[in-house]
Image (tube, helix red, strand yellow):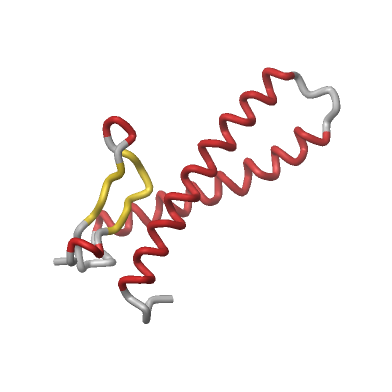
Length: 99
């Protein structure tokens, strides 16, 4: 089992937007693979959203409501990507041989 300071921060939140953690030594286990898959989806969605944001912001006729939606979506994407970065940073710090 993983040491308490080596818990993996998962790419989703629990009730009350509290962080969720995984304690396992099995990086190929079901929950680890699920977390990896969700991280990949979140990163892909963030990349697509960034592309869409560039196009939307270049359009001078963009409706203010659409800009607010874009801002909310970008905020959510940045939150997801930050959580992934923190999680990966903790895992690298826990295992310096990990790439």
